[in-house]
Length: 398
Ligand SMILES: [Zn+2]
Image (spheres, rainbow, N blue to C red):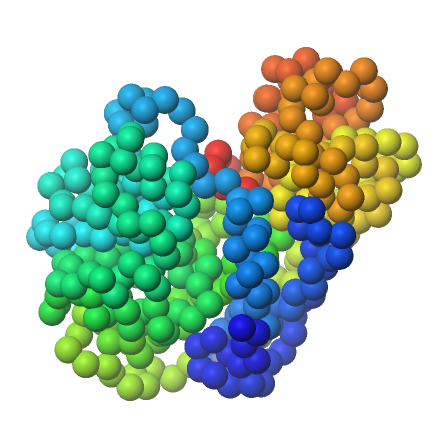
């Protein structure tokens, strides 16, 4: 299903702002992706998006969404920061308790917090391991599957939650129509997505394989209105995560409201071009930084960041192996290089540099390498001296 038109407004008129060639796990050939702005509505998106089959393959081989830690610690942990943002937003708009359903709820950690507040909770997630973890750790019923299958079986919900879901979906208007149908009259939708704003604050590699959509506030509010929702509160947090995020609470309206506010498509083009220029500058600095490695090195981190690093630098021929903490990646290859466990890296007698291929988890990886006995002078972080990077730490993200 390669969509030749804008996922939001169906225009076929696009401006390509960046192209990436990414080496995925166990694939010899690279995957070429365009990131584009719609000239009609200004929405930033992968266009055309990668095929759903390739995306499904990626989630199976590459992505890590399970919780790590023992059950009792997970049950007694305070709300994660995104869950706290949702709870605070709901408390501030004064929503009465009722039936909440979370789309893409992973192992149910946020639903667990909602239930503690008195909500009746249920959710869906496509990952079998997450669904079984929700049952065994939290005792929460989670439907196995994506919203396309799960939401049409729901009705009269008081609240739908979607945290970092909408940027992954192929057809957001169709998804919002299903949400609308599953909600009770005057039911609410609360969602959070990465926010396309302030291009000078966005990290390298922000245009990424897993994200099909990059929502500007005006575009998302318009999308909600077109789907029959009235946005009642929009909150943008600039430094809560590694990039700006936007949460919106919206109320179901009896019918759609057409074309309430006009969009200025050039705003999307200006933002995307500014960011693409910044991204180019950041990767050029990284390429310069790694250019002096003309002998073998290890990488730490198999994933999309590594695919981007290999696309933007000349490092590939010098890589011996890529270490990663996720057991499901061990024994696979990326760009023809073996993916090994941290233990194999620590035991390797070759005292060569270890380049950390991660923006989000860089500091945790430095700690893990030191703890594993890797000498500090062998460790090469790429971003530690970047002046304007967000200070937050989020272990689960890639
Ligand atoms: Zn469009």
